[in-house]
Length: 99
Figure 1 (cartoon, one colour):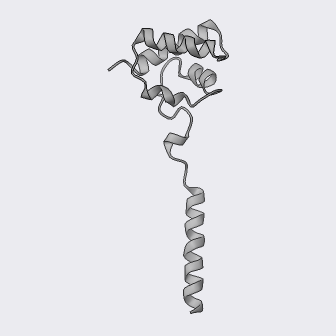
Figure 2 (tube, rainbow, N blue to C red):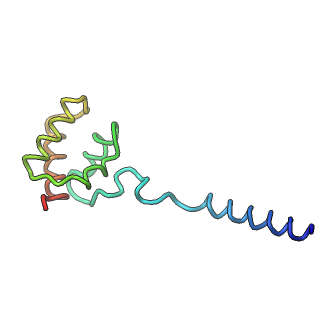
Figure 3 (cartoon, helix red, strand yellow):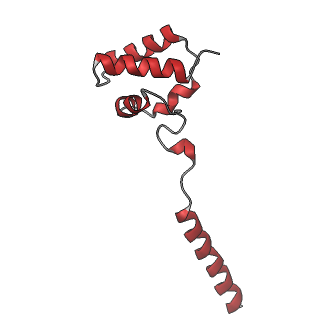
């Protein structure tokens, strides 16, 4: 009886230790779905203040659509320069082209 309890407790503790060392899924890391490219660092810096920049991966926009979306984010209070917003729109257009 005692062996069974100790064995179960040992397995439980090993499971907890393994779970504590497991990195979070890539979907939980902000920007995980953003491919490398010029403008990614600006998108991470500006966009991550309000939301996960990986949200862009689910959009299907052309260059004008990305520009409009970035302008809307700026109007909603995103903090960045005009050059930052231009770089973000250009990056998103290249990284996530319309399908």
